[in-house]
Length: 131
Image (cartoon, rainbow, N blue to C red):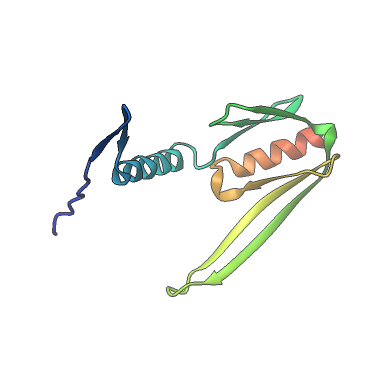
């Protein structure tokens, strides 16, 4: 096996007292950030099915939205099949669509949550008082 070497130039330019790093440095930071968020949660929204409401917490902005189960008018599941690529792999996605009284829709992608099935069942139980 060969060795892969990543060459990055760190060029600093002084423009009126402020330092600007070169584009390769910013690209490395952006790539690191992308993979960090993909590995840590696979989603930028943390969802909690509390007994009294559904809590959506945005991880970057730290904004928190609480949705009462009484505000949910419809819960639906959507299956999407994508086109096949060159390896004959068909991409399939499953979404949980939660429609609210005000017309907004909250969509949860199955691939983004490791506990998708438990989360879906908890929302259904709380919404329809099945406990």
